[in-house]
Image (tube, rainbow, N blue to C red; front, side, top):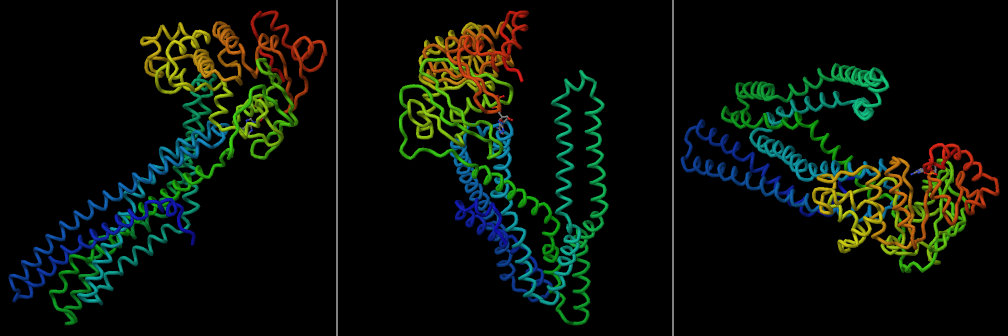
Length: 584
Ligand code: ADP
């Protein structure tokens, strides 16, 4: 049988856990001693002729055992918590170190959700396992074993009888759990369906209400809840009887009836002195007690194992190879040669892309949705590595450049803008934490966001999410200020269309012009203005470059770009504002 995954994960704190388990074992054994002492005292007193000093010794031993048990349990818990802290710190560090090397492009919404779950929930489940469950299981096993060992010494025949309720309880429990695997899976599915229908309902509540779909969405939730109810009733009908019988078999009353009944019969038959019944009356109920909590413990161990598996999976996520002897990126432009790319070895998203971004020029990427524009832009910033061909900056392959040096060379502003907790100034300073405030303000001015920041209650010291709330367009301009301050020679950016209210859009355009000055710029262009003025327009379709040139040249050629342009022109004429170039 393969050892559980968590066992491997606990290896670094194995020594401390062994000490904790040992202390807990002592606590469990010492915890039974007072009951043994009491039964010895009772036997001594009932048997007559007890020597007072022996009784006092027993009382003293019992009391000392209580103290030892409490102290050992407290020490075990402390050591286990210390081990748990060390393990958590180590796991969190490993995760951070590992995630720093995973390709940036890996961090999609789903994967980021997974990271959050592992860091918050799974590491917590492991805390429960390390700091509580292991000790709990030690205690639950050793207490009855100690009691049984003592009872075997008193009268082995009656001691074996005390095992009968345990055997019955276990057999019934096993019967209740038989076939539980598929049922647990069904339980998970049914509960998951309820969760997702609730999330769907809440997420889309505005749409659902506006478009009158409330009944439909509501129905899905009701169906999920009904299905869960049916499933649960079926399951409990099947198992309640057996589970209750199992609990009953190990209950103190039943245990005492069985053991004392047999014991009295044995005394009656003269097989056992009457005083020997006392330890059985005190200790027999302890023996099958673990059965009643077996389900929760198995659940806790399974939960810990599942959590350990998620953590292991995250730690096994492939990382971006780092150059062993990195080179500094050279001066000069960006060159793509024969670039091909596919996500996870699936269909090619880009193939045979040759492209030169000359220093200080603006290149606009256009093409229908899904053509591969974002993918291409992300490859330049090494969000992923190319599957074929190469991307060089100043003649040095991006894979040979140290990541930190690469990020100082290639900046990016993508549509999904992330503002971090902290002050507005710190958000702009992200790439250069020690940049003086004047420079921060200069960048913000160029990015057309300075006035808005000044109007905040604490200006640049306002905290994002506390006293600074930004619209999408404003957040975009802050991220442009950030890129300006980072002052990378190459900048990759995705013009936002999502926040294109005319006012914001005009200001974003001005901000982008500031960014373009003296930089090598690759823009995923959605607006005609950007495209028109670009030094080079690259038309992508189905992952291939289909046309390349300046606006006038491409129009004159009368090809793909000219058709896209014409399709947009009426709109441009009528609105006289920038319009979206992207057409299928
Ligand atoms: P564009 O920016 O031109 O709209 P994209 O580069 O976003 O195009 O997408 C190109 C193709 O790659 C699309 O077919 C898209 O479905 C696919 N794609 C984009 N991102 C991923 C991803 N993270 N995993 C798998 N496929 C992706």
